[in-house]
Image (cartoon, rainbow, N blue to C red; front, side):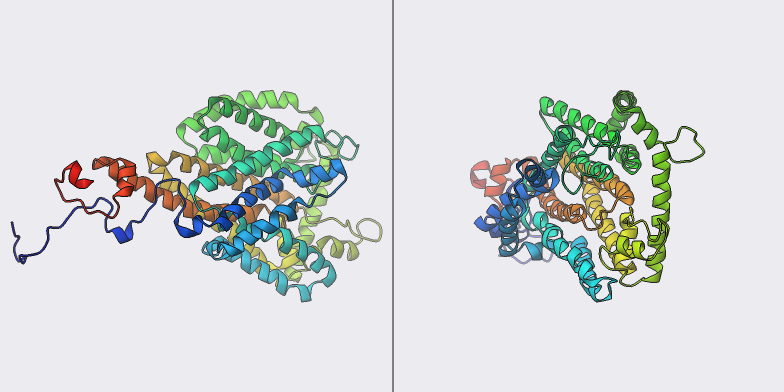
Length: 484
């Protein structure tokens, strides 16, 4: 029957639950997108990237070098094929679609521009070259090679597995020298310092929590929660006050953003875990953790001396920032400049770094670099938070909600802890931004896939039928035979 003003001879309008075919070419959930995802180069690069990420977070390359007394060059063995895969598979362009990558790239440009203005140019170059060789490329590894939600999960698994390995290494290769007293430290690598090791754990622990929350296997959940408790114990045994504040920030974040079930679980189990962990930590470490004021008679003298030193270094780093606001003292030059231009210990300064990542950036690289550094962090958090909020409104995306919740938990604990360490030129933040970009893109595709599958089920299609019929127009009232 013709409607008013409708000319005759036109075909009846058909119903397509997916909309116009040209706008809905969405593959089934968990599959790769387009020809670039099926590229053999990208697939090989992705597998190499998984191993590379595991190496970074497990420190297995430094552990093997320590045990075997031979450098196996694992970072080059897996890093070079990974970066080739990134370049040849278009991973650089894919990464730069994310705003955090733009901020980190401009940050590197400022590092290069600041070399001529450094207080010691060759020293700044010696710091910049390793950063360009091993740290900055990690920005493109995950975002450039992980295209699907399943691949993003694999990257998170690699981080969690690396965290489990470095925790085991602490038990096997604990530094028993008198340099750290009763504080936990490991004997090898770039994070051998107690504070550095503790902040490394602050980054990886939320990914182990993700395994515990998201796994369908009860046995795996129990193992993961056991690893989490062991990791928290290790953090407390380092007696790092900055890392302890990182744990506190993580608890507050959990209570603020977690589900009601998660909050109740923490409130019920948390006090029991605190008592058990406190009983397993040396008394000297507990005293040091709570030693914030000289007014406390039981405060650790060593901890108070450390606080005084940190206060002095903070003041100096702020002063040098204001004296050199554009390009700073030069990358990695704070300790040298402070030592040569002060008389704190005899005729020289303390020769220490800033012990604050943010003033390390501002004093060595300038205020514009600090602004980009913070912008990279904030934009990464906001990108993940947008995905989290989308997933919260969808019952079929609980796995995405849990993953993004744990990624933001990792950012919260890590960014709190790095206020007390010198991690300005470490790989953690570029990796986090890269993961956020990959998760954001993969999650949007996953949302579309799951929405399409839901629509197909509601109109009488099985998901596989919906996908196979994506180009067909189905008229209202059509029989199953005609639909096929």
